[in-house]
Length: 328
Image (tube, rainbow, N blue to C red):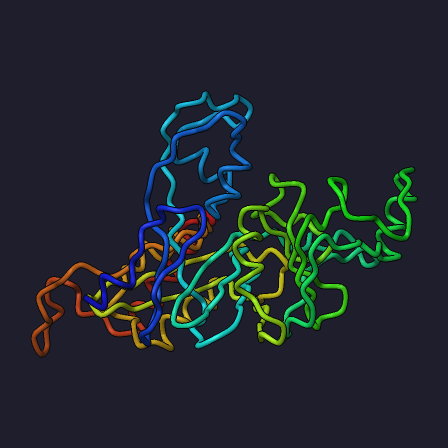
């Protein structure tokens, strides 16, 4: 029963599940969606927390051609929760997801985050670190940072020092001020930007998602912004899930080594299918997939058995040889 509770099908645009138990947690899954009038791949991906290109590839769609109303498309937004806490917010930059833990429940929301650095003087990356919610604002006034004023000036556009509440205010109707300077969690007036790295560092949310989050969060709530492109989960039923994301901010020395270390640290070296692992590293789809090896006959003493009976050293050698073959 506990294992079944750890896999939750994504039937809503956001996910809300019971987490009143310890252990690894996998949320989301495979579902279908009927395209509505006004939809596009960006918006569908934003609602479900899936990269729009992944939606296009999975459904054989041409990104340049509008998807007709009524089209049924498949979506897979299965992901591993990076950390399970009692109360608070976790935002994992590589999976562009906000995880709210409250009263034994987890609710997840896709978000937009800061754009990768283009050069030494233009860095909009969302910072990592602990924070608290210091203020809640309805119909907020946007105090435009000097860096953004300069950006507008260089593009030949005009913008004042403040933007009043209204339909042209990028903060939307709701904003949560964090203790990290200049970092807000706020509604966006650009829904297509969600689940992308397009902001100046703030955490953007869809209007319907921010409407739900805003009343759930109180001043003083603690949170943390983390950076974990590689996640692994071992469930009670024997399934082992791996999720590999793009190192968008180029903070990691080697995603490959991160994967090896994550598997080794959990004592799973001889329980995973290394061919699947290699494919996931190469693809970087950002979807959690089961990498557990099929059941094999245990090797007898002095033999290799059907499964090969490889040692951990054999597995790592096999793994690296597979990776090398993908580069040739």
